[in-house]
Image (cartoon, rainbow, N blue to C red; front, side, top):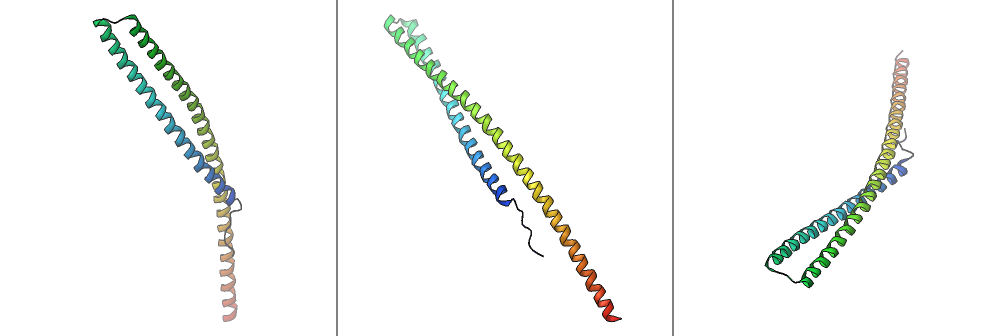
Length: 147
C-alpha cells in the first residue's frame, strides 16, 4: 500500500513558517516596548533628581534666569516623556494586533492538523481492513490447499 500523504502539507508548513515569523515580530515589538519603558523610567528619574537639585538650590538662593533654565529643561523632559508614552501606546496597539494575527494563524494550523489526523486515521483504517482481507485470503488459500 502506498505511503500516507497529507494533501495540504505545504499549506500547513507555510502556516507554521508564517506563525514563526509573526512570533519573532511580536518578540521584537515587545523588546522595543521594554526599551521605551526603560527610557521613560530613566527620564522620570532624571526629572525627579533635577527637581530635587532645583529645590535645594532654591533654598540656598537662586536667580530668575536659573529658574527659567530649569523650567525650560523640565518642559523638554516632559515633552520627551509624553512622546515616549505616545510611542508606547501605539506600540501596544500594534502588539495587540500582532497577537490577534498569531491567534488566527494558530487556529488555522490547529484546523489543518485536525484534518491531517482525521485523514491519517481514515488511511490507517483502510490499511487495517486491507491487511485483514489479505490475511483472510491467505488463510482461505492455505485451507483450500490442505483439503
